[in-house]
Length: 532
Image 1 (cartoon, one colour):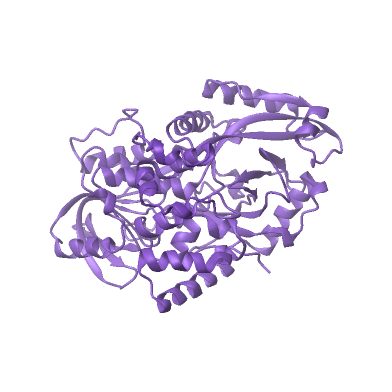
Image 2: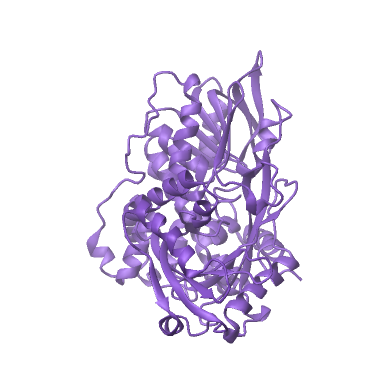
């Protein structure tokens, strides 16, 4: 059954099945388990195609667990004249909020206006009129100085004119990927992490399959496919390089820092113009903490490992928050964690990555279809565009936009949910979708408590350990749950409790636990702590 595909031990069985059935013909093999690959798998599987999705790391490992967590239309795209991207993004934002409450939720935004500052209230509200028109709702509201100060008691008051309120949405990007992948599995897709598309199999110049490599054991296996889709994002030029010398992807790094909510209490997101370069910086509440981001810098060549925030980026973000909220007197000692992700921008030769368009591009190379660029918000539309580009290899399949829901609606187990406060009921249903009932049915009564410092329940940690394709400790703490970002020491302040759950659900021995802790601490200290 699809529900058990990710349970402990099933990964090995899936790989053995692949190795023993090398002659099986897949319709689509997808390389990349981020939000784009997940969306493609979901839309292809619902149309009855035989879909195999693999990722050489964990699901959402690359960019889709390290975004700015925003499902937004992109106001700056209006300003740059890219009306189509904004229109599609706002429409998809509204769709996701409707379909997945508790996972994609409306978040208020505030923009402070200062004397001689840009954009001024008039210009900004003109942009918001268009924004609200696309949404079919009025979210915008201007607050005079006195009212704005009441909303923002720590705000920089020097030359303050007032502020504008509007709306977008916020999500847990990694959980969004998992929910979409679960939908793909329900419709028959096979989805495996830590398996790479090591190389392409070609016949007379035409891609007819792929050689896979188990990243854990090194085992190689071949699979046949009518089309291979390269959804590896910022790494897309690597696989495409087997067929062409063209290079189009411009990896751009965006970094963030996380501080306790009580040190910088914000009930809504703030769009703050950086005092040095006038770039917009976001300061927003997320999972009970406050996040400050993002930078936008060329990352250069990337290989198969994570990226980290630099010292200069840390100081840049701290300068922005000190300018916008001087009364908070935030210091580096307040920082709990950091994260950096790489955006897969499509290069147009712009002077800096902030000037590149965020729209996606697709390349069709004789059996390999590559997708890069685009926004988290529009992943559904991107998936349909990719499948339409692959139509020549999949004749007779209708990939037009039927408007069908992305997520299957399910009946919640009301009696179990009633044990939880309303906000946790909404969270569980949003984060786990079709798995919500099973999560609650299998949970220990004493684990329906919130993990101190986070929003997750201990029951969520246990569910993920046993049912969500956990291979390493960082999968559990950094992506399935977000304890590694939200808690001190990457969550290992609760090492004994986490160890007990991993031992019971994953069967990890003392030796295996020590190996995983050492691996996790190395990753966290290198990529998620404060750069020295």
